[in-house]
Structure formats: structure tokens, C-alpha cells
Length: 148
Image 1 (cartoon, one colour):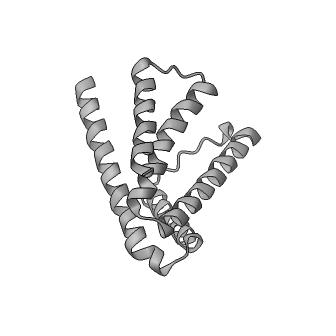
Image 2: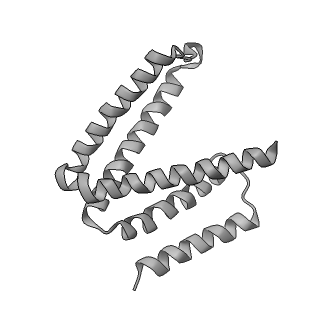
């Protein structure tokens, strides 16, 4: 059962990365030539709302547990959405002005490094030696690719 889970995890991860890469190339090569980053974010947000609305309408499965939503969760959600908006705006602005290879090879590895470090420092997740070595390799890769 675990092996089946790992294969699904790997395949879905590859598929998600492939779709994300295709989307980034479409944004860089076509959409950012027509729209400003903020306009693209607005258009994307409208489409997200439409897709989610159709999903909930046709699946009849809105499963929100309103008892669990308190002010703390609302503030965390606002913070998460705000950080996501700011990071997407910065990413699209950089993508608009730089090559995809420069933007992706700098930002995406840093997401991994910061994600692991934040989970370790704030949420007390354990980091093993392999992960520490991986972070060091990622940082050295960023340096090698982006500095001449």
C-alpha cells in the first residue's frame, strides 16, 4: 500500500510540476506581454472563484465546518492570502523582466529552503542530515547558476 502511495505521490508531483512549468511559460511568453502582473493576478483570481463555484455547485459538497472557524483562523487565512498575493505579484514582475531560467532557478529553490527552515524554526519539524546537505546543495546551485 505504501509503495502504491509513493508512486501516486511521485506521478502527481511530476504532473503538478509539469503543469506549473507550462503555465509559467505561457505567462512569460504570452500573458505578461498583454497584461500587467496585477491585471493577471486579478484575472486569475476571478477564474479561481468561477472554477471553485462550479465545482461546489455541481458536486453538492461544500464541507466547511463553520464551528472551527474563529478569529485566529480568519487572521491566519488573511495573512496567508496576503503573502500569496504579494509573492505572486513579485514573481510575475520578476518574470516579466527576466528570463524564465533566471527567475525560476532563483525563486523556487529558495521556496524550498525557506519552507524547510521556517518549519524547523517555528513549527519544530525535525531536519535530518540529508535535508541539511540538500539545502546546502540547493544554495550552492543557486549561486552557481545566477552568479558569473
